[in-house]
Amino acid sequence: MASFREKIENSEKLFTFHDLALLPNYSEVEPEAVQTTTRVSRGIKLDVPYVSSPMESVTGSALAEAMARNGGLGILHRNCSVEEQVKLAKEVKSSAVDIEKWPRATLDEDGVLRVGAAVGPQDLDRVKALVKTVDLVLVDVAHFHTESCFSGTRRILDVCPVDLVVGNIGTIGAAEDVVSKLDGVAGLRCGIGSGSTCSTSVQTRVSAPTLYAVASAADATRELGADIPIIADGGIRNPGDASIALAAGAWTAMLGSVLAAAEESPGPVETHNGRLFKRHWGMGSHKARMKRFAMDRYSKPAKNVAEGVEGLVPVRGPTSEIIEEFSGALKATCGYIGAKNIPEMWTHARFGRVSATGVQELRPHTILPSD
Ligand code: XMP
Image (cartoon, rainbow, N blue to C red; front, side, top):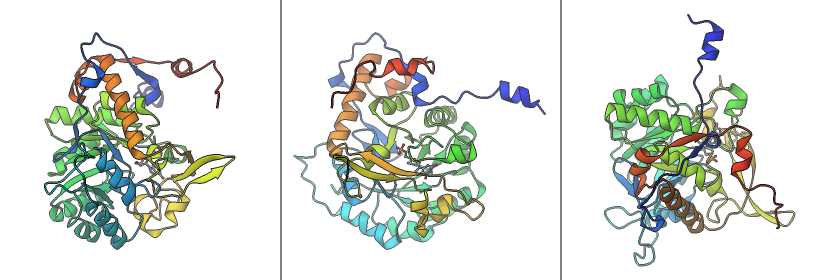
C-alpha cells in the first residue's frame, strides 16, 4: 500500500470552474453564426444546451414549459407524490404551442412541448406512471455509482420506453461502469459537491467538482465509443461557468440556482430591504427532507446528516431572458475560441490555469457597484 504521504502527494487535481479559463484562439467564427444545438440524451435534441435542475425550488410545470419553449428542457422534481408529478407533466404537455412565436421550442413528434421528470432509483411505480406522459426520465440520486442504484436502474430500464438519464456521477470509473454494465442508459448527469445549496463536501469531504466530473465522464465515454450525452450539473452561477463546462466535454449544462431565480420557478417572490428574492433549497436540506418523498436521495437512516442548505437568490427575470443571456454569451465564447458549434468547442478549447489570487482579477474589480 502506498504511504499516506505518497497518496496525498499524488492526489488528483480537482479543477473547479474558477480554476480555469479558456484561452482565445485565432478565429473565423462570428458569434451570430454559432450553432448551439445539442442533445440532452441520446434521442432528445435541444436548440440551446440548458436544462433545469429537478429541484423543488426550481422545476415545476411553469418553469419546465418555459424551458421547452426556449429550446431547453425542464426536468420536474420528485419531491411530491407520483400523482402530483404526473399532473405537472400533463400541464406541460397540454400547453399550446405557437410555432411562429416559439421557433426554437423543444417539441416531440406530435408538436407538443417536451418534458423530463426525476425519479428515485427504486421507484418503479413512479417510472411506470410517468412514462405515459414524459419524454425523459432521470434517475436522481446524490451518488449513483452504487450497487443498489445499478440494480434499481436495471429494473427501471425494463419498464422505461423513453430516454433514461442517470446520475450523479463524478469519476472515470463510474462512467465506465455505467457504459459497460447498464445497457440502454441515454445520458449521464455529472458533478458531486459543487451545487449552490450543497453541503456534501462540508459534511463528508467527498466531492467530484462539476468540471472535473464532466471531463472524466467525457473521456470515459469517448474512449469506450459510447454515444451518451453528458450533463454538467452543479455550481453554474453565470454563462461563463456553463461555457467552460461545455468546453470541458459537456453537451448540456443543468441550472439550479440560476433558474430558481427565474420568474417561472415555483416559489413566491419575497422582498427583503427593497430587493426581490426567491427561495432556493437543496434536495438534501432539512426543508426538503421534511417531505418524505425526498428520503431515498439523501436521507437513508445511516445517512442522518443534512447535505443541503436553504437560502435566497435575487430574482433574475423571465426564463426567456436568462436563456437568451446564456446562449448569447456561449456564442461569444465560441467566437473567441473559434468554434462553430459545441463539438468544435471540445476540440478547439485550450485551458489555462488561474491562480487563487488571480481569480479576483478575472471578474469586475476596483470600481464600486453603482446601484
Ligand atoms: P446549482 O448550483 O445549479 O446546483 O444550484 C444544482 C444541483 O445541486 C445538486 N443538489 C444538491 N447537492 N445537496 C447536494 O449535495 C443537496 O441538498 C442538493 N440539492 C441539489 C443537484 O445535483 C442539482 O441539480
